[in-house]
Length: 309
Ligand SMILES: O=C(O)CCC(=O)C(=O)O
Image: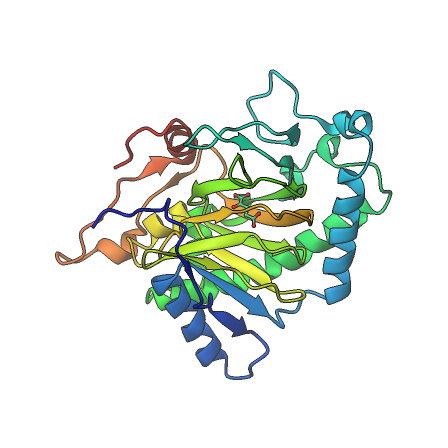
């Protein structure tokens, strides 16, 4: 059946919420695996990242975006840069040609060898410290999730992390800043898409906007204070040989409130080759459903909307 992501069908079903503080780790791991198989998106609570740190991260990001444009331009993405890092304002039309209504900041937060402070705001002064602390925590949480997801594939705990590139896996912080929008039909926040990377961990402020597409319906991601939304991306869909879903999602606009979101994308370094994990396709019944790709080529083809095998 063809997927119609344009319809405005909103469902009252909720994206799964998983409490990581439950002492029965097997139960938690099973919930993470099930949500990744059936939804490709879920929200985790009591995940070990201090509420106060998330509050400080949000405050620092908000303060940066509230600076005058000239100050934000200090970390602008250079015009001739082929890389993602830097600040950009309203740049990409959606499929229907609607104008975007969002400003972005991208910078890597891990590994240290790939961190360039050139693109980290110097104002507010605590921006750097908060992001460094957040990087340590998000790395730990994401590695735990990857361990459970690897075991859910019947593999050793390190399998997905290693398949994504091990210690060379890059953590890319993005801040989306969506000002209030008087006419949401004319502009777009984030258009329908799946994430190109392995897995994304996102926090947002209290203005609603993130929606996931499931069973022909758009489903609102509920706001939970300090909740972290986990999104399975194309790399994990492929590495799991189709077992984990990369969810179609979008961000809508609020008429009155400014919405801000902080996704952290875990992705391979550009020259890394990824594809269905070899251990999953050893017997005759489990043929690889996807071809291996150098991540750089995969990203390029996806961006240019070229076919992908
Ligand atoms: O703002 C959001 O909640 C979603 C953002 C998103 O999907 C993206 O930046 O790729």
